Image 1: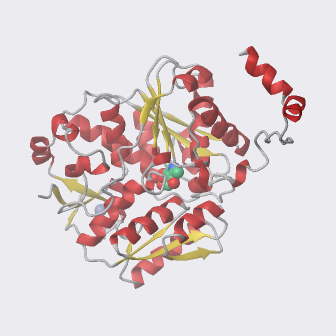
Image 2: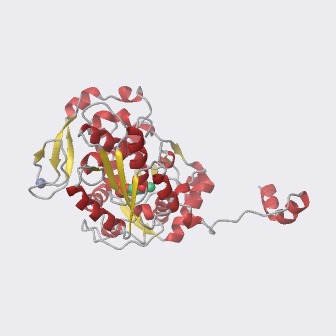
Length: 416
Ligand SMILES: *Cc1c(COP(=O)(O)O)cnc(C)c1O
Ligand SMILES: [Zn+2]
């Protein structure tokens, strides 16, 4: 049973069949999936959702597929929990983490979009999948393509972290490293998608792919006890996750699954690549492209595809944005580790550092519910931490050597 009616232009409203279309032929507007919400309201209750297996497919009526899901049965429904020690460090009362750093199988929220995109790619008859990626998407496309039996090409900037490159190679796709930025990679993929009959998940089948990000927002609302938080801090690369978390809360309200919410959205970026945050701070929806230079490579998109819609979503919600330095990103990674036992990648460092900044500025209040979006795993981005953390104590295997070298640490442990 399909609840997907077709595709629709976000600007002029023109309707299209549910095929491979990613821009409006008439106005060049972006294309969105259109659903039969009345039918979904009848099928999708809290009880129905709660009785299903813990994966992103528990919300399948709100996802753009015609048949049964075929990819990513074990993806999604990641941990969501109260972060008491981090809350104390930041001086806020009600703080939660949504932790996609342990997403199955590739340790980032990109498992969500790819599960949806490859299920749809199969329905559309593709046998080869591809993507333009800052690293995590390439990992997810490679892994899910391997399991689902697709041929696979992934295109990445040549300067990615070693962990991100190996975490694609291991699944044996064709990895193409491009001498240029992500924006160069993306431009080439747009050209290739016109020539090769492949599903480029975030190019020619982007309208289907992007819907997968809604499941991050659905899970936040369900796991919070069927309500949306007052505030949520979201890392931004293309800006798609921001727009889809906003859409997720709106759809749940429309269906009566959660009460009316007024969640304020906050965009988190690195200073070295902050086109979305810069536009929001200018209260503008005109996103000026930049040339990225930051350790947060997963967020290094200088010309974001959903820049316009994400700035609009943030400003309409009454939220805001901030950008942080590379130094603050490393401190953010460490603060999350030492307070909550979660090792996030640079994007998570950006989210935490931006939250800290916005709380300090009084923009995010200290006494309302706040969710931080942790979207990726730190083991994939070790480079920025090498030589930056407290070094191990190196000693001889004797009691005397331990006591001679570790006296300070022992003293402070005893004091506590
Ligand atoms: C891709 C990515 C994002 C941002 O995604 P967009 O939807 O493109 O804004 C955030 N965090 C991580 C770890 C990512 O890989
Ligand atoms: Zn149009």
